[in-house]
Image 1 (tube, helix red, strand yellow):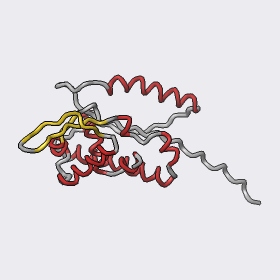
Image 2: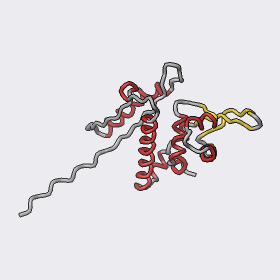
Image 3: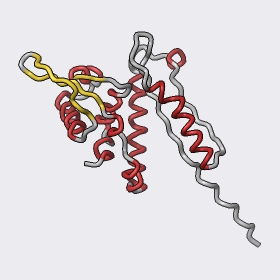
Image 4: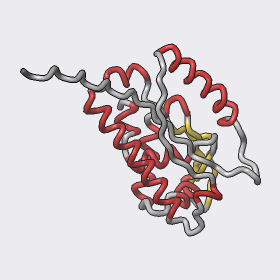
Length: 184
């Protein structure tokens, strides 16, 4: 199964995001975080992600007559690979982007519904800006952002740290059509 086929499902995207930040979780812990997902559905989606190599079992232990598995995510496997992205049609890219945006909207809705949301205090933000960049300047920007973000992605959980999701979208703006000549 291609990674896009596996990843572009609302529940599986939520499972993948639960593991972001180098987390390890049992299915019980995952079920507590995704309490609105029925248990049978959650287990089925964990199985799909495991068979696809996105989640891997890192420990197993017996608990009350059953085996409890602890999973970790293989971050590189949890991405649509460049070759696969190049092979996607524009319609498939549109569907992938809709799944991404739906996940973002769901995360924001769950945050607001948490009962203690305070976007200003919590540093929740959303903004858009525009830059004029050559392709080389854009490549430099992407590299610079990676230099800033990668060390922080390696931060371990700590009592004074909040787990935060960071979404990023970059879109080229289509060129405006040239004005038509006035008709005589």
